[in-house]
Length: 277
Image 1 (cartoon, rainbow, N blue to C red):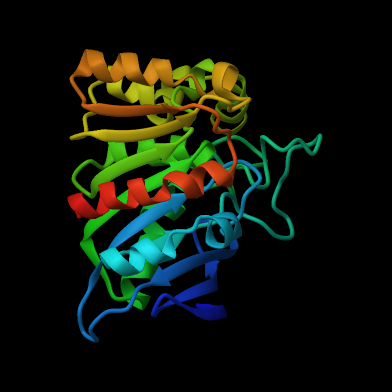
Image 2 (tube, helix red, strand yellow):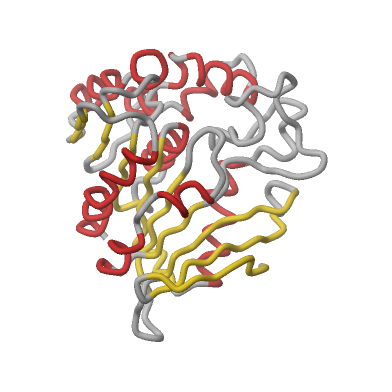
């Protein structure tokens, strides 16, 4: 693991790191904030999965999480959203919603994406092992959150590993990718035409198929331009009600899809996670 940069912040250290990923077959960059702590102690870990077009840098630079993580004693980990580098396939038309920056947190089975696009295994297996080895992380206390495409990832991973993640939350998540254009393009392109395979990467479908978590927090801006066509939080609300999952769904008047919204409600989410960790 190579240290790209470190900066002091709120008594802790914000670092950016790079390593050669055996899962993705290319170098991967991620950021980790370690709050101030007594040497020799371990701390709970919050995973943050970013959205379309993002890298680790978006939330690292604009998420405004460090003050709260320092107060609550939380390690904050932000992976990239896709593999990158020479030989990594991209959308043939260069679209923003597929390929580079749009890995959708799945392990692709379709060519030419199957070799590198293994973000599910990277985020759930390889990177956690690296974080556990390199940082003062208590891996018995993990939680996960994300934004948009990353909200989709956080929901599906949290629902798949309910014993690992003590808390799950999301900002403007793609809750039912099988039912919206972003998701149909991504899941079809990475996983092929078998819609049964898609259900493992669709939060609403996972809940319909029996997945359960203790509770869930979602913030959604009412001025989000993607709300009606791509995000559709009403589908998650209905699925959670049918399954008996307590969902705190907050529709925020005037807020959009940007990091202005995320940074506004980040404190609420971190306190939600801290209370459960």
